[in-house]
Image (cartoon, rainbow, N blue to C red; front, side, top):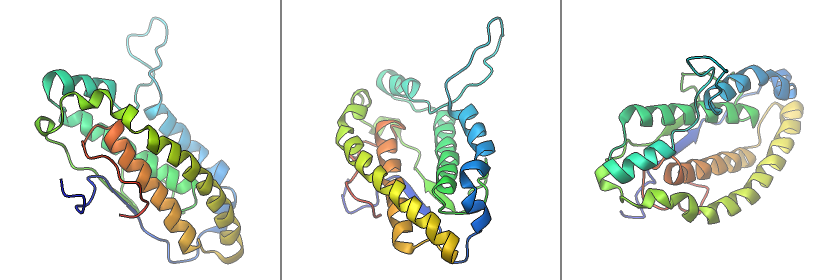
Length: 206
């Protein structure tokens, strides 16, 4: 694949070129709790009540099953892909809200201002055995993202004060936080969603 081609995992968040709601921004750690609980219920591990026929909660990214299906059957069931994609979209909307990037309350199903696209892969074009080691090959990215995440924390704190004082999210800080989110999405598409064999680039921009 031509490295100049766009990476097959796209993320863009619309910059709020307006005054943000300082009240919800000030109380963001509290107002996010209801949607964070919902996200936890759909993305957490399965919870089985003793004697119950069905799990009380099941979810999370389908990873191991996809990995085994790619290795042994060269298939990526479409509904597994759709579940993973929609869960990533939902969790990113919540993350964007926590990071003060937007002040619309995160929707469970509407795109809103967070745009994510990951093409559905042709499983027969993916390397058969690579899914077994992608999570390991991505270790350099985990290390870099750990440092980038520290920068995100400082950016959000500074942006919080800026929003309270001016109503605006500084554009440079906004672009940095979105860039880190974009980096995370590419690594996730490669190492955990298993939708591409193209190694993620080490950059924040498109």
